[in-house]
Length: 69
Image (cartoon, rainbow, N blue to C red; front, side):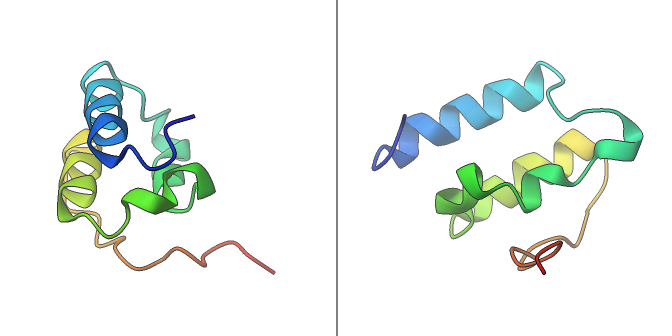
């Protein structure tokens, strides 16, 4: 676990995206609602990295509650 280690978690997130860890086209966007990544949501770089991984601007910032209910 990287709880409280935001810099290390962000580095791992960036590396994962570089290695293609975004899923198939049908799965893209999962990272915006993954509770394990929620501590990174307040860091703008998180959204930039995710958007680059998808190859476009996702407009997904602020959808942390999507899929609940």
